[in-house]
Image (cartoon, rainbow, N blue to C red; front, side):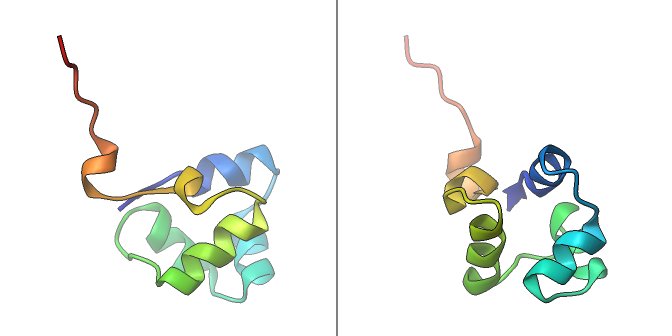
Length: 72
């Protein structure tokens, strides 16, 4: 699952630790999600998106949604 957590953290001048504390997980969890090594639960994904006041789809993209298709 692709995500834009790092982008949103940068926009809000937050470290991985800052975000982890804000949503109640470890910094290692944030690191693993950012690197795509861990897929967050739906609950955790919503916590992250709510923290940044955006829709979950703005932070996370799954499967087919990550591809672009050109139609002539």
